Image: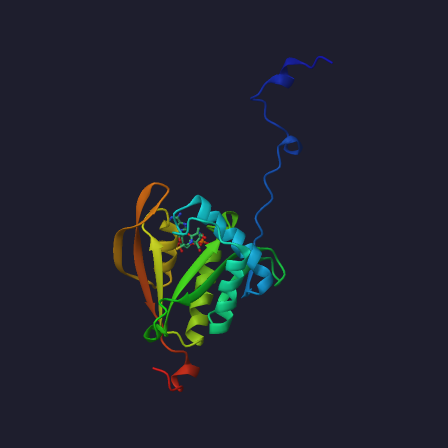
Amino acid sequence: MVLPDQEYDPKRALRAAQRRRPDPPAPAGFTIRDAVAGDMPHCRAIYNHYVENSTVTFDEAPLSHARMRAKFHKAQEHGWPWLVAVSGPTDDGEVLGYAAVSSYRDRSAYRYTVEDAIYLGPAATGRGIGSALLRELIGRAREAGFREIVAVIADQGAEASIALHERQGFKEIGRMGRVGFKFDRWLGTVFLQLSLRPSRARRADTRP
Ligand SMILES: CC(C)(COP(=O)(O)OP(=O)(O)OC[C@H]1O[C@@H](n2cnc3c(N)ncnc32)[C@H](O)[C@@H]1OP(=O)(O)O)[C@@H](O)C(=O)NCCC(=O)NCCS
């Protein structure tokens, strides 16, 4: 069938019903909850994306399921908060990202200091989820009795993470240059630190 020329005019405005529908909006809501063992495959997939495609982590080989499970087990043993953000208004949505703390150093005098880690799936970034997760993580670390949180962030490619931490009150306390080498280039680290006031419940405690 031959159509009139005007049917082929690429500049012709489409009627509303003919226009390509925009991509469905990203889920507006999300829920933050404690991570459970069943979340670990999702956390692992999110983390390994950044291992393989970015310098925001200095790991170069993807984490195995066993290694991720072991990290989570250790966090549970030590009472280190590990949170996930899931899509939607209830706890059973899809895992969008996670935030966790772990020991800053193994030596015992560091026991009131933790280091945080926060990773969102690429599609979940830039919507305030990281801010909400980190805010909640800070509160949970305070409740658990920790007094300092340290963030060790790559000095290249992690601008969002530096901005995120500064917005939550972290202060830059130093930098180290050329301590990492990934994807054929030298990388440094930026150290940020947040001091936590003890929660009211903890002030009556015997801890410092
Ligand atoms: C870093 C990360 C957790 C931040 O979470 P997010 O949900 O994307 O961040 P938010 O939307 O809450 O924004 C937090 C702040 O960072 C800023 N920001 C976000 N993306 C940015 C970017 N690419 N460059 C600079 N600033 C950025 C925002 O403007 C916001 O500041 P505002 O409150 O003044 O607007 C997330 O982007 C992520 O997972 N990135 C990849 C993994 C990563 O870098 N992890 C940290 C390793 S140390």
